Image (cartoon, rainbow, N blue to C red; front, top):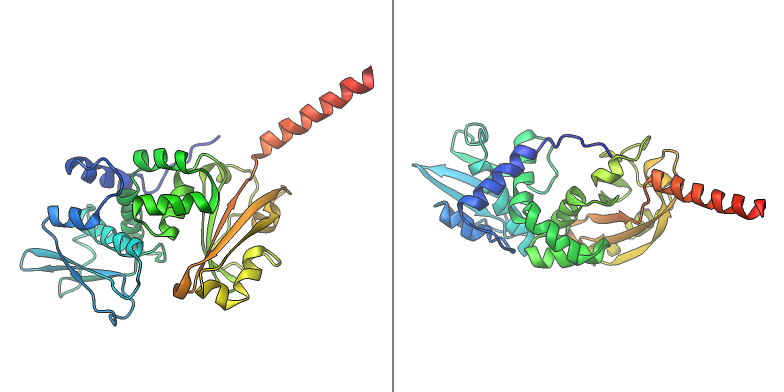
Length: 291
C-alpha cells in the first residue's frame, strides 16, 4: 500500500498539541471547556443570524466565540466551536481571517474550498475526535453506519463529521459521500480505497450514479427531511468507474431539515485480495482436474 502525505497533518498535530497542553486524554472532548480554559468568551448567536455556523471576535484584546443556535444539534454546535478554536489556535489564522471590525464569520462543515476554513474544519475534527482515542473507539464500534452513530454518541459529534473522521482513519476501504438531490457535495475516501488503482475519484458536482440507492432515496425529499434511512448493495464501478466490478454495501440516511443526505460505502475488497482469491480457486480446480 502506498503512503501519501496528509495535507492537513500539521493541523492535526496542532490539535493534538492543544489537547496535550490542557492534559485532556479522554472522550468526549468538551469544546466549551477548552474555550473557557483559553480565556475565550462564549455567546450564542441569534437564531436568525443568517445561517452562519459561528463567529470569532476580537475586541480590545479579548477573544470571543459566538456559536450557532439555528440548528438543534449538539454535535453541530460542538464542531462549530471547535472550528473557531482552530482559527484562534492555528498559526497564521489570526493574522488572516479577521475583517476590519475584528470579526470572522464561519460556515463550518467541510463545505468551503477556502484554505483557512478547510484547516479549521480539519482542526475541529482532530480536536473532538483525536486520532489515538478515536481509533481505539472505532475498533470497538464495528463497521458501517451503525458504528458511525455509536461513535457520534461517544464523541458528542455530528453524524456527518464522525463519518468523515471514520474515513480518514479507517484501515479498510470506505467512502463517505454527502449529496443533495442528484448531485454530490463531496466525497471522502479512506486511504485503502484511494490505493485501488485506476479509480475515478468522486468529485464535487458530479451526478449520483443512476439507479443507486442514494439516487432513489434523494428523489423523495421527505426521506431527507424525516431522516429516513435505507440500505442495500450497489456496484463499485457505478460509483468510481474503473475496472472493478464488485458488490459494495450502500447505507444512506437523510440529515433532516439540513437538506442533505449522507451515504456510507463499505464492504469493498482490495483488487490484490480478489486476485489472490481467484488464483486460489484456479489452483484448487487445477488440482482436481489432475487427479
